[in-house]
Amino acid sequence: MSPPSSSKNADPLVSFIAGGIAGGVEATVTYPFEFAKTRVQLRAERGQESPKNPFRVVAQVIRKEGFRSLYTGCTTLIVGTIAKDSIRFLAFESIKNAFSDPVTHTLSPIRSLAAGLASGVVVSTFAVTPTERIKTALIDDARNPTERRFKGPLHATRLLIAEHGPLALYRGYITTTLKSAGTTSVRLGSYNILKDLSKQYDLPQNSGTDFVKGMCAGIITTYATQPIDTVKTRAQSVKGMGAIEAMQSVWQDYGIRGFWRGTTMRLGRTIFAGGILFTVYEEMSRVLNIAMGKREAIT
Image 1: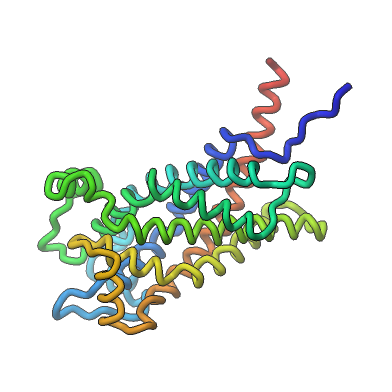
Image 2: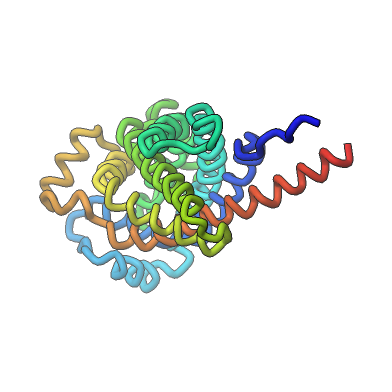
């Protein structure tokens, strides 16, 4: 009998479904962190205080606008994250399998980062930029309750397209793609490196290990990509800015330290997000692989 085919290469359908479920769970749980981080990064209106501490942002929003306001734009992010992580994991696993060693099924650190970089460009084009544009515009618009223009994600989408054309949804594409490519490269690349190392040192491959690896990947990702994230947020505000103008506005407002504005809140999110994302992804992959294996056995 011939030896069974290797199961090391991920099934594309499993990667797509597991990635979408993991992204949806992660976005729902951690959205208040994302909301506060975005508020901190946006340019303050004249006469309004712009707190440096993102936790003060959360307190102010709850006091003035109610707890539910922390989930402004959440639907857009959840839908976008499901699509984003479905495509992200599918693209990463496909590229990773193409680049991996045929015997050990592992990647060198450089190839892991390169696979993540390519995946980030793909996911930014097809999912991230439009959903981030709508999410950021909704959060920016909600800062002035008496002058709100958008009733919800669909209304915001229709209004922006009517006023500026379909390309309005791709405002900030360059900065978003840079962020997406950098984030995906660092997050998935570092996670894949940690995963290979954990196997090399015979660490238990369970949910606890997956969560720790995801948290470590989240910390690395936050500090490496925060400047791009800050510029991206400015570029995708309601008024919108070009990449250069957004960079100049951050510099004028806060100096070099401004590019890391919102790091504390983003770090709080990405640590938990990384742990949740990769834990749910690995568990769903195991469940789906078992289910597909049983289905194949029956057929």
